[in-house]
Length: 287
Ligand SMILES: NC(=O)C1=CN([C@@H]2O[C@H](COP(=O)(O)OP(=O)(O)OC[C@H]3O[C@@H](n4cnc5c(N)ncnc54)[C@H](O)[C@@H]3O)[C@@H](O)[C@H]2O)C=CC1
Ligand SMILES: O=C(O)[C@@H]1CCC=N1
Image (cartoon, rainbow, N blue to C red; front, side, top):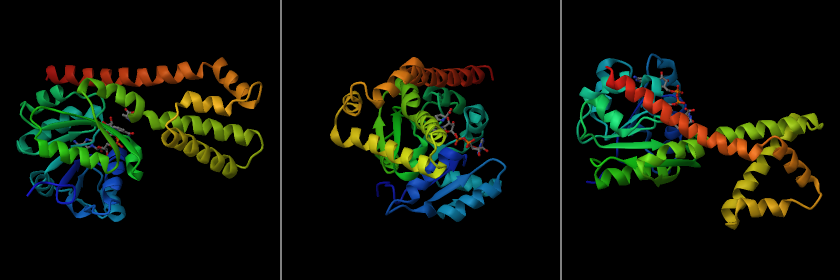
């Protein structure tokens, strides 16, 4: 029997925001199977209990139950912070079986460094960069596979992330820029929304009205780009009447180097992903 989304067993190691976003996406599927999802976390049983209450997943706290959850998984997802990667992967290494798919969501951490820490190069690894919108089925994930990943496992990993939004298979070298665009991207949009809401409030709107109008504006703008197929620049031109309000607003944004700032932010996030990966790789080499 081939492994599919509804019959595969998933074990998450690390139960923070990103793991929760994926689990929320997976468990809201029509054929989502929370009973086949087990979550492990470091030193926080209350957090795991809360996740169980909300999503119906299983969790394990004691060493024996944790080991069993890993042994029984088809897919083991590592979802801890880069700073915990060496310790976490080292602990996992003796427990992982060669046929289990290891999915990493850790920013910057290369498959080669994961192999180095695991101490072998034949573990099937899917290195991914999802984002938190996975929790509402609108995530955007980049995925890269190592050579050891079977066709079935590729399909399963792609289906897993596609079920939480869209999933694009990319070369591993492109994952850091995926991080800059869509991994960190939601934060740039939230930052802009915070600023728009603040402007609305300063102009006299109630916080509720400013929030509601901002949310709908961002939703509408994203949907316009998606549904019309027009370029954002063209849609922007259609909003901008000569000498009108939008022109005045955009000129103000230009005075603050808004566009350059956002482009630099995307590139800097990608660069930072590379730095995080390098730091782990150097640390792993010095062990
Ligand atoms: N938050 C986001 O928007 C995104 C995060 N990521 C990546 O996801 C990873 C996790 O990020 P967050 O969920 O934001 O972090 P978080 O801090 O919310 O969650 C990490 C969890 O892992 C646990 N943990 C650490 N070491 C562990 C171990 N050895 N065994 C079991 N649990 C362990 C921690 O106690 C914590 O609960 C990071 O590597 C990050 O680069 C990727 C895409 C987007
Ligand atoms: O800020 C971070 O490092 C993680 C990776 C992408 C989004 N959050």
